Length: 256
Image (cartoon, rainbow, N blue to C red):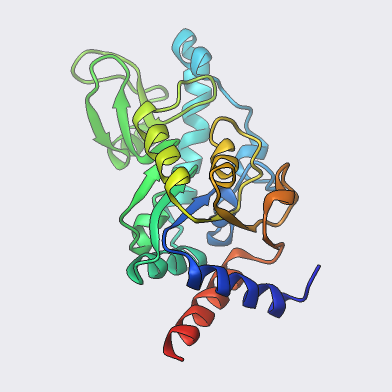
């Protein structure tokens, strides 16, 4: 692998030449903000088993188990803020380069950093929804109910099951968001993938689709992915370090 500096120079060239950039982010971009991903030892996902959507619907005990995990995850996310990588993507949007930001994350940190064109494939943990009547609440209100002793909150309107407005395992992906994400993939001429194992389908197919339709790929990920061979430039370094260097390089090029 080339030196870090060589890869930064190569990636900056790609950024400068690109007319339309799409970013695709996974949990790895937020670990630098202190939010656990599936591989974080001792993190929330490591200490609780996954409750599927079907279990959530069918079993009160499963809903209790699910909300116990979510109560802890809310506290973790609430205390987190956007890091250098989130801010760099927002800066890339302000520079007119980044047209779409597709994320698998539910933490809202891209929006906190100032990104506006965010497509949340797996929903958001900042809201909760009644699965029966569709009523929404800020997640803080549901957290207060959990802390007051409720173990599986129900809708105040229809007694339906309340769930965070996220996509659980076994739950259908949001059609509109997936459609927009694929449109971004086929329209871009450069895609930057940050912090995803690219193992969860159908979201993982988005970088492949961009490549299939002619886009160049930059991958920033601590571990290997099944499609590393498609990337023109590959980084194993921290996302914040890489993205900050890319923005500095791009600004320097623009000033020349």
